[in-house]
Length: 136
Image 1 (spheres, rainbow, N blue to C red):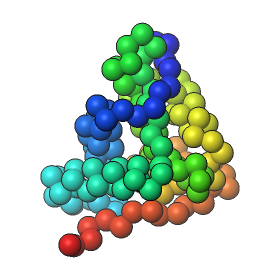
Image 2 (cartoon, rainbow, N blue to C red):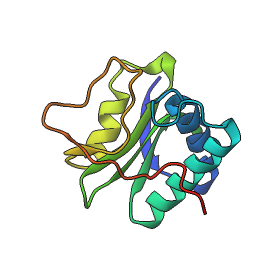
Image 3 (cartoon, rainbow, N blue to C red):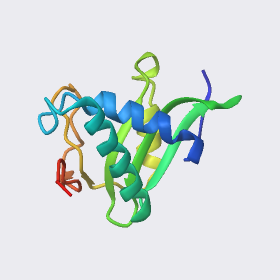
Image 4 (tube, rainbow, N blue to C red):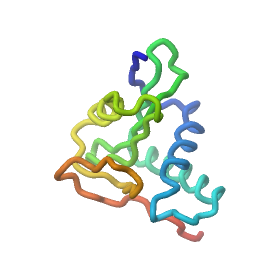
């Protein structure tokens, strides 16, 4: 499937929140979190990131911009990747690499997953950005 990258649109929000929610739910920081509370937290993290200048890029079918196959959220100013997601059936095709490269030179990441065999590139720093479970 030929893929193109495009800017995040408001209509992508539910997909981004849903996939981030599902794919990060086994991370040690959130294991055992109530499902709905965690989904709301992911929505808050996305909104806060975008409000602070982070950029979300979407990878979609070249012929159908509504068929999303992946996305990445990062901050060009701090050169930090917050999260990258690619659908399982198209992983290992270079889509994640294209998304990250399109965000500019990344030197840090803010979400650390324990359940992946992929490791951040050598030299990247772990800079946690999000405070999970803060009571209001």
